[in-house]
Amino acid sequence: MRASSLIFCGAAAAAFVGMAPSAHAQDTYPLSGVIYSLRTDTPASAGLSSALLDQAVNELEDAVDDGDINGAVLLVARRGRIVLHTAVGTRDGLNEDDPSMPSVPMPLDGIFDLESMTKPFTVFLAMRMQESGNYPGFNINNTVATYFSEFAVSSVNNKSSVTIRDLMSYVSGEDIDYFDDSNPNGLFDDADPWHSMLDAPLARPRGTKVVYSDLGFRILGHVLETVGADSLQNLMKTYIFNPLQMNDTGFQPWLNMPEKEDRFVGTAWSAARERYLRGEVQDETDYFLEGDGPDPAEHLTGCDGLFSTASDLAKFAQMMLNRGKRVYSCNPPPFGKCISTLLPAQTVFDMTTNQTGSLNLNRSAWTYSENLLYSRKGYGWEMWDAGMWPGGESTSTVAYSKTGAAGTLMVLDPEPSREMFAILLTNHGLPSFEHFTVDPVTGKMSWEDFDWMLGDIRANEVMTKVYGSLAW
Image (cartoon, rainbow, N blue to C red; front, top):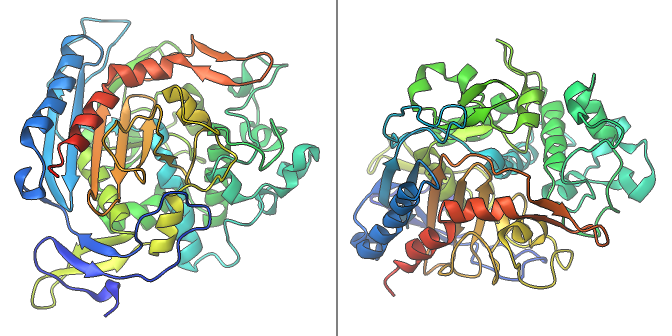
């Protein structure tokens, strides 16, 4: 029986997909496994220690008490059982313009600014569009210049050969962001910012080094909007949010779901916008590119901009652990549950295993920011690291994660003895770039403020206790 036709009772059904592992994978996990639906249950039912999960929550309460964050939501699930879903503190992060601004308690269904946690969704959309057959000729091995001729104007660093796949795995040679030495305002007073980003020279030759790039993911999103002839909002709604019933997820919530305003989690005061931000992407460049008019943006950004809840992200995470399969309600007898495939297991495997070979660091990361900027990558995801990574010290070596710099994180572990995920959403807000440095000799970047943000939200402590709660 094909996995897409399985009907089952309870939490799980077996599905087997016989495919070869990726050639780039260093640590692997099985492509076949059990498919789980989500339900609420006790820690004991999932073989987890409630005492250690309580300690994880205590870490967040301490972070609130210490003034490092104002509030957070934590959700933990194993094998389809949501065993912890709790909120601490208050809804809104620090308002530097009005530190005593009152706030309501953090809602369990708070809608958070995900920032870079947008990237795995952009990648998933690319793969869905490729697999759908609705866009003849579209393939992640196509060059970016296939869709934008100005991208190939510069012949430096083999730019014309950069592919969509290169953008997804951070080996395109694109800089971390757009810089123009002749214009300190960069894109903010640019008459055609998208042209400028496409036309910008590569920072290094294509395919020579892993370097994290918001610019590359903006271009990736721009390619998908061009191929799909629609906005990222509508494309993701069609290919991801609607199938998974992620009804509280999207770009520009102030525009696309204003009726949920009381659930928008605040992040920070914006001096540029002269207002406190709730339901608006905090990153100023992405907000500028989106625009703040009454109509939907002409172009959204594939690097940042999504907002979501812990419950919605749990649906996405479980689908990823299900190797691309979703469970949904249906009415044929006897059980009322069906399974369908959003992506083949091999595609999900490739997205979540090392795709950068030896182009990443040749050692463990010494800092969180080094892990972010230079360590092993899947497509849009950071891989487990024996050194500093935000997934804590108790996951398997096949775990993967994604951090949003405004204080959000999800960690997934598909190893068969674990099959867990944890989602941590906070209202920390973006760290500054006051301590972002570039070595003048090597060009190596460091971002201490990012490291401190992950310390503030207790990423290592929370994830170590969550994954350590597994009773062996």
